[in-house]
Length: 86
Image 1: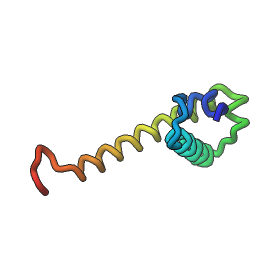
Image 2 (image 1 turned 90 degrees about the vertical axis):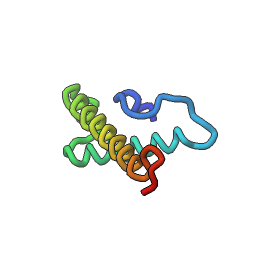
Image 3 (image 1 turned 45 degrees about the vertical axis):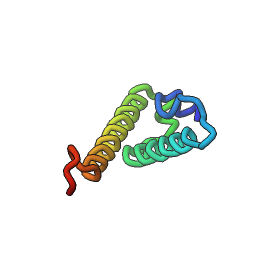
Image 4 (image 1 turned 180 degrees about the vertical axis):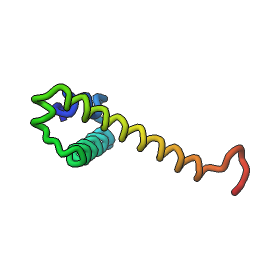
């Protein structure tokens, strides 16, 4: 996972015994693969070109934002607001 940390992607927190950090790293890896496939780039492009590195990092950050926003919307819909039963 050091390769993802060099790119500014991935978990930098401590590894826990329940495997949470390992799960987060796997999710980060999948997101990076998806972005690379979408942009038709390789890991070599990222290493050799700082502009491509910034481009992929921007796409990664945007994907994380969208994922967090979708999770928040889903949780807001599932929990009743102000104690009102749906």
